[in-house]
Image 1 (tube, rainbow, N blue to C red):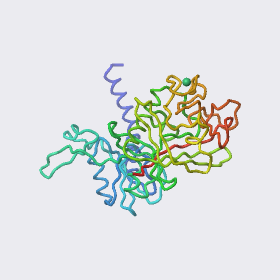
Image 2: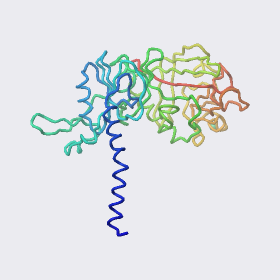
Image 3: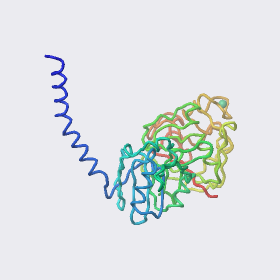
Length: 353
Ligand SMILES: [Ca+2]
């Protein structure tokens, strides 16, 4: 067979097989452009209140490198811009709209960064304009737009810039920036100093936000802290502290907290003196800053503000209930003691001033 007819044959075959696929994807794009009763999980990169749906779509178009679609809620005129459209959830009152932005990045917009808006002026000139109005934490998002659902949002931290965080908008009035979550053992928490410093895991399941993020987040004001936990009998407990702060790396991320309340014993400020976390430095197996002769992080298989050693071990091994291992699981001693590993924990902070 001569090479030309082979190429022709191959091209012909490709055209035939690709045609239905192209039609199909075109069909999907058209029909999925706007769906009622659903929203994109996101992350949500920008929230705007009191604007119309068309303006919401326009705001997305102004950010071609950041925005892939919008969630819009007519009732509240609430507009959420999202940077990812691969995951959706059912949510009454919402419409989600997908935007094909790849074709929309004009020659001039290419020079704009992801944090700049690309605006076309009436003179037809295109300008890159700083998009300055980013929320400092989940508390300001919640305060500015009451009724936002829990989920992933982009916030802006001093020195670090934009960070995606999980916001709990439902528990205890909402507005909580979550910095630790355990729920299924899907992530390994026996990690190094550097990993605890930078954060790890998956914001949709289990994660540690990172000591560096936590320090800069908390440097913005006064924060309260709340820890929620659940056992395998579906019982829940919580503790709350009216002030919570974490120092910088030179302090080894020393934690300070005061003002306990809750429906279970206080582990962090009023346990035996050798176990409170107040004024403790953070420790990992490869960086022992605890007050014990041996290595608490290695002994409790967790990174934490170990004393000598602890009265709760939220970052311990996910051992799922009763265990023979002494305080190596996800423990909270005043509740289920050292030989029971909890089902879920969530640690989070909310700005009070
Ligand atoms: Ca030690």
